[in-house]
Image (cartoon, rainbow over all chains, first blue to last red; front, side):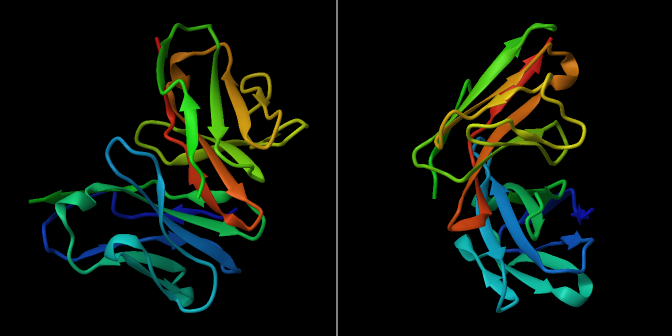
Length: 112
Length: 115
């Protein structure tokens, strides 16, 4: 069965700092990869997704993620975070027609 | 994208009772899913709601405990039966379209507390 690991459970950054959240998955086959974000009091939203093609994916609000097949990773990055990026971030993986498997989430707190 | 509403948004229930959660989508969708998000944990898929037939449950979840209905392409219900404090969680409805079946949209969730 596929699994998703998010190693950072809680990250605290100052505004303008760079962000990288780690995501590793367990399966070596063809996968679809996602990052979802949940802002305080709001529902889960899709931040970005990778299906195929360019392994560097750009999403909303200046976020990007890079799919590195050899490392089974799909890390989320943002060069300069803002206070409004405070949220919980979930990595998710879908293998073929199997269900989507979510990571445990990373809570990001940005200090003004 | 889909606009998904859930009712109720939150509830506090007594042990042994049942609660039915409704999920309404503003457009016809192919797939509807129910997830549970327990405190400090990730999202766990409970079942896939199938229109006009029995839901497909994931390992560890059974129909007697979590009966699901999906009478049409825009509506589904999840019932949490014979509740115990361990059922306290956020329950999320999620949908996807045939045109982009890999991408899922989520509802606002129902926060359930069982005393």
